[in-house]
Amino acid sequence: MFGKNFRLNKKISINLAVFGIFLLLSYISIALFMHEGKIILRSDGSFHLSRVEEIYQNLRDGHFFTFIASRTFSHSGVGNFLFYPTVFLYPMAFLRFIFNPVTAFYLWVGFFNFLTMATAYYCMYRFTKGNTTRSFLFALIYTFASYHLYLGLYNTVWGEFIAYTFLPLIFLGIYNILWDDTKYWYILAIGMALLLYSHLLSVYMSAMICVGLFLAKFIFYKKVEFLRIKALIKAGILTFFLSSFIFVPIVTDLIGGGLATPRRCFLWVSTIFTTFQLSLENTAATNHAIGLILILTAFLGWIIANKSSRELAIYALGVFMLCLTTSLIPWDLIQKTPLYPLLGTIQFPYRFNSYACLFLAVTASLIFESIVRLGKSQYTANILTVIASLALLCCYASIVAPQHASIIAAKDSSLSKNTASPVTIPSDVLLDKGNYKNIFTYLIMYGETDYYPKQSFDHNDISSNKNTQSIVKQTVYSKNKPFTGVTTISYAANSITYKLVSKKKQTLDLPTIRYRRTVATINGKSAVVSSSARGTVSLPVPKGHSTITVSYRPNLLYYTGLIAALISWLSIPAYLFYQKKKSA
Image (cartoon, rainbow, N blue to C red; front, side, top):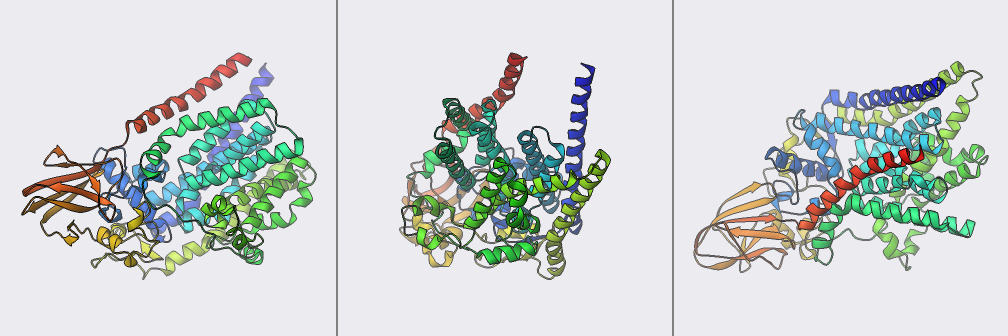
């Protein structure tokens, strides 16, 4: 008994030490950037930082939930908070109460670096039945892959960046259900729920791959046991309850709501040669690279992986995912096939790089662990582990060095305040705590009109759509003519208030996007709301002075879903405790 407890305590101590190292590495990964106190704004950065700003301002006013944009996104009342997950933006918003926005940004990135390492370590630890060395190496390789750094630190593509954290849980879960121990079916549900809290497109892609793995199991083994199908169904049911509140606005307002959604396409496909070359350069400045270690693993990993059918299958998956990002797949031809509606939603095939990084990192960890095992004693093995870890950290340093250099070089590109007509924020501009708020004087770079009504939507070319222009310019209409009686417009959590004087009773078209659950009051009394020709709020106003407040009121099912999710999360440890007690 003493020996068993000693081994258990030793495992706990080792794992705690590992997580302590992860915390240290997470801080190191962002310390230099925090010291500079500057951000280079690119791609989706203005979109996500505007969402964080809206959440933060609402929290300051004592409102936890954010549904529509009243203070950001040109005060249009756009509901990207309804249809694009925001759960993991809240930590940054909370950090804003303690730190300046630039420091909060880097601490949030560091937090997700830690969370990615911790998740990856846990999953590999489960997968290998307690191999600490391989789990540690896998966590470093996966977290500091150049594509992950591109998503989070370089290009601020945060939906995918957050989703990347939880991909190991998805595939550990589906592996347990289809091939290993079905009693861990809940891991898939947890992974899918966290992915639903992060990035819906990643859920779609992960589900497609899981379906492919299910079909592969059926084809190669000629059957899938009922026990495993049952576990898959249980995981699906738990996923629904853990994330049901995410689906409510999609059902009540998005489906059939006449809103614009991301178009189907296949863009920015690189050749395999370009991917290979850019990966060898070991840079985070491109979406067509996975980094030096993983690209070498893609070409040489079979040498080690072919010793195990399980490892070889994972390696093959990694190579296949990498190929999906390139022109080796005839994406242009697929557009002319029935597969296009299914696959076109992906938009950018390079998004498969997240999955290529995951599976190839599994193989790379096997290679590094094989090198460590060359040590004839535990001491030598530990030294080799340290050397391998330092090599991985050197790779990380070389990946982020150009990003740091670009911050230094961009000192003359500081973002100034926009005082002109609405214009799109420029790319590669420098932010610090002094000019951070200037972001919100511009139209955002990508996504300003996402979830606008179709008649007022344009793919990042707002100047070509008169409806869109009138909304972002906050133009109020009366019979298709600008109305000049507005005296003030004020903004609060999930609401916009217009004070105006009307010379007669008339119908006004306000520049606030109208959804099915959009409501309004006139002088404190409920008003009848309809959609204007541009998809905004239209309502009759009386003669004289009026105070009109437009807001969004979620369906009661939304709050029911939140309660169901909370109960479901609490039920998981209760279920595990019951299972442990039952097997004791």
